[in-house]
Length: 467
Image (tube, rainbow, N blue to C red; front, side):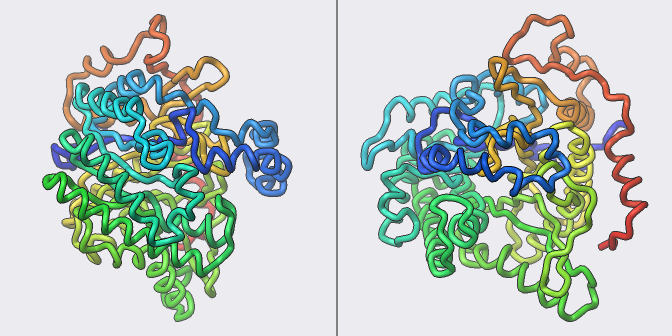
């Protein structure tokens, strides 16, 4: 059935990436940590990941130290124009990306002219294709000279981030409208300073609070710099927000736990930057149910990382965030680790329905950036989780192949915009095409039940509470 246009004409449809996860050749505190810890991560892989349903399929890769080294990435640094051609083929009109601080300022106070020009060419290539650039300044990676000083642990170090933000404003201000200062400060501080899984592997509630508070200050200062230098810019933050629910809605303990978790995870940081945001970036992956102060999620359906999937949870999250802050919203990350592409189409469809429902109730949703455009390096998990609309074969010249869910999504967007049927066909290469790198290659059809139908079957067979 042909979809109806229920989104604004200027709605920003796109996908997200992060520089360290796709570019290749980055040198920062994460690359240093990868090299130091790859062997140990491989040795302990079964202990950490053996419970996953996909373990038999990923065991060999997860137990290989090379899995935990970002290395050449997916060579997006050199192949960005080919990847931008794929954006156009996928019917996208926007793209969220990052600039690698360690490339632009590899040594304290020393700017790399080649890197500065690279990102200028990068933005120009997007705009040439009619794609709106959405810049994310900080996505967890930092130059080692900055982390050697203590990074965001010390408030006096914020001047270095200020300087980097000013450099970006000076160099790219004429070409960038949408800017995200920080990505998921709640995730970074939790994994780096509470449970110690990420560099610098601290387990200190005090340091956690200091860094979290300093990141809020860093955003507020960056907002002032950007608005002074680029008055017409739209500046926000990309926050991982959870659809946190009580397992038993009328239970006092579950309801109290839910309120506490919503405040601590979703609202504490946003409350401290609410006057310094033009819009809020919503990164949505999780719906979590709390029973007796503990998370107790349904057992199915799960994606490859073992995360419970409830894509329609995006709707109550958007509504709740809108009611609380009355700021325009943009979904800046949303996706699944799904190597076999079993659930992604269903996830996309339900996510769009959730946004349609929010829009119908007056929520100001401005855009949707799927995570991710490309298969990428997934931090501590390494290379085996597959989030990309575009599969990347790192063993065979970084070959790009559109997953069937990506092609479905492109056709959905095309039909929603009422483009002629010939347009997408013309954009997609024939099976015999000789286009090598930038061609979207359609996978063979799967003679399986649709993901949506399988999920409906699963849900009928379980006793999961309906919100």
